[in-house]
Image (cartoon, rainbow, N blue to C red; front, side, top):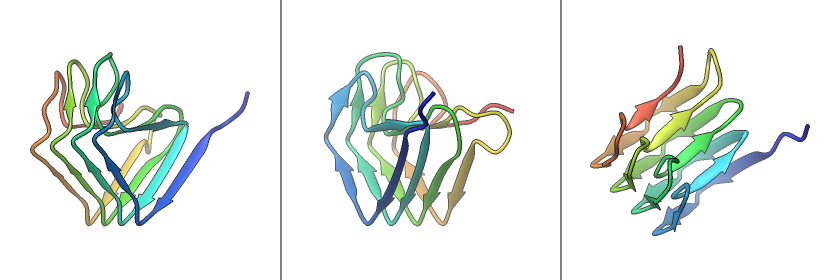
Length: 103
């Protein structure tokens, strides 16, 4: 099938509400990004999720996001699902850990 990729540079993802609060794609890469005050009303994560491949955040901030059941930063691929470099994850609320990746 199709692989959907999002590549962000210097963006703000703010105040979104939905099943997934902020961003969802197979592969997500963000540099100098802010994910703030996003709300997941469904089973999804609050700020950002990579559903089938690598999630990479570089010099990014994930703050004040809320999910009813999920975390805030989720990489769902097996193996190297999540990479945080010089990034901050703070003051997020949810039904799971703020940062999640399978082993």
